[in-house]
Amino acid sequence: MKTDYASLRSQVRNFSDFYGAAITDAKKQISAAMREMSEANKDLLEKYRKEVALRRKYHEQLVELKGNIRVLCRVKPVLKEDQHEEGQSVVVTTDPNNESALSVLKGQGRSHNFELDRVFHPQATQEEVFQEIEPLVTSCIDGYHVCIFAYGQTGSGKTYTMEGSTENPGINQRALKHLFSEIEDRKDMWMYTVTVSSVEIYNEVLRDLLSKDGEKLDIKINPDGTGQLHVPGLRLIEVKSFQHIKKLLAQARRNRITFGTQMNQHSSRSHALLMITVLGTDLASGAKTTGKLNLVDLAGSERVWKSGAEGERLKEAQNINRSLLALGDVIQALRGKEKHIPFRNSRLTYLLQDSLGKGNKTAMVVQVSALERNVGETMCSLKFAERVCKVELGPAARKIQRGGGSHQCD
Ligand code: ADP
Ligand code: MG
Image: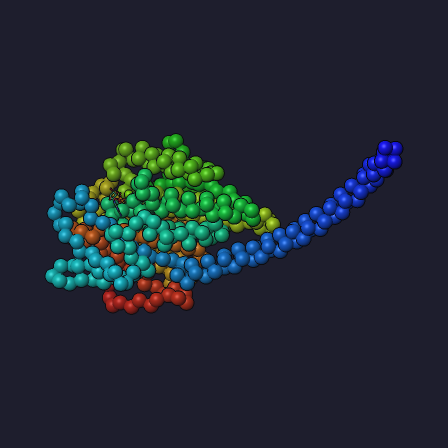
């Protein structure tokens, strides 16, 4: 018993030495493994960064190949409510084999063919339309300025395309959803701040749609010496989530209707703008980017004076016509890479100057009705589209040649 006891005692005494040595050894092994892991991690992160940069470059190349200014056309489906009136036969046809062709029957068997960057047939879904716009939204997160316009006569589906319905949201909501999900994906490498403002332009007057009383605003040159424009007093609201933005969109929509009660059908006679600014900071390098996404539901393009409008209504119509013409001129000049771009000819183009200029991206969705009774306006809208589309743009551009055709509708 005594010997056993002595031996056990000595074992116990030595045990702590053993134990200590084993632990030191294990520690060494663990920290070596950890070093290795973190080296591998660093390496992976480096590779990931390179991949992200490459993805960005290819994305830009893709957008550039498609053209920085894209003119799309969406044909509105014939709805039940459209069928109660006269002139309901369909005169606009799309070509299932050619995604950029469209043809309008002008009576007596004559038809006029148009070719744009992309044509959506009447059954095209909101998702399909957004697919075409999505790369531009991604560019905005990368620090580009992007404008998306909906153009067309009242009732042709501009608001449907931009805002959509509750069950079937349009470009605005889909773009913002995409924006927030991209931001989430990049959160380990980039930090983003998103701010939103919303204005309408009615009779060349700018109003803040996110203020309670629709405050009137002015466009000024920024006193900071950058030569950039700014709108003193414009509400810029920082948004953290898609849900928050949905609330703001609803507020802007409500305000637009409220301010419009004095004037009948006000909303189709003003331009509504949703302006989203995305400030990005690269967490590794500290580099900053500023992207802007301008979503614009334009005023109805119908030629009201044709129906003998007078007074206030005529003035309204002239203002709309002037600003839509100015927009067409600016886009045409940009696509033609002209030296002088006539931004100052309307509030709308002046306000969007720093987003429309060189190096930015624009999509114009021209909405048309397919019905016979709207054929005059449809032709005018398509001529507008063609005018801005015709110009050659960079290496991948198609050359579109067509004879004659007036510049603007009369
Ligand atoms: P606009 O804004 O150009 O005046 P709206 O977007 O208000 O025209 O469209 C007029 C009506 O047609 C609305 O009731 C809208 O829901 C409907 N509409 C427009 N485009 C579509 C479409 N692609 N699919 C289903 N309904 C549409
Ligand atoms: Mg509308």
